[in-house]
Image (cartoon, rainbow, N blue to C red; front, side, top):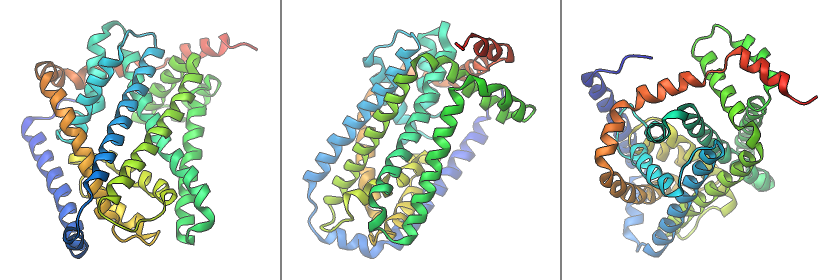
Length: 354
């Protein structure tokens, strides 16, 4: 494991990330200053913000349910109430609190403390949850691309083709993860490649852990796609609060997932500034020039959920501070335990029915 970064270095990195995020946001605001002025010159329909906030929170709660089901599939005792509590704590880390410890690491560390005898399974649930979340996002955009193919411009066709390619790669990756017979040639391919080999071994461990629950995993991929569909509806509702004319809902289902994909970039406040700029460029492809402002409106919903998360965080502040200090080392050790040894692969292949 790498040594923990010194406080001074961590502070400098955080200050740099803040500077980049707010610099990008300032650039987006400057480029859209005339459109922003037009928005503030007209009345805002706050009812749509209320509807969007409700949809966003429902989607968030379903996301916590997805993780809860993945944990339970590993045979761990884990209540939905705890999943919601840890989910909101992780959400505040992802949205607001800067630093090296992300929300997924905090959630995994909490679960490791709750299930000390099954730490590898706890971490595996978190990794697979993130994989299903990203793949569900791409799947939603792929379906929207297929539906809207005939009605969009040729430049959007290129974007749709890229999304389809990403979906194919994701499905291929999942197929490999859940196919132990492919582990040996894959391990030979990545042998001696350092971090890449470690990542592959960890993904193989996840495949072995969830192979008996493959049906549940596929079902939860569908849940993930549905959740992202709700996020798109929340985005659309926030946009309706500001604009009278919008791209079609299908076009939103194509563009919004790609914009939301950028929020995973490790910049403060959910990739503040970067996502606004990308959203603006994406919506220009469907002749909507207020995409950046629409993303800012969606931020209100994101940070509204952050306010709920902050309440849960403060209610568990003492535990969070204890876990935060040991989270990187605890999760790192659990990841090391998940590495699949060649003997495990050989046994799994041998045990498969003919």
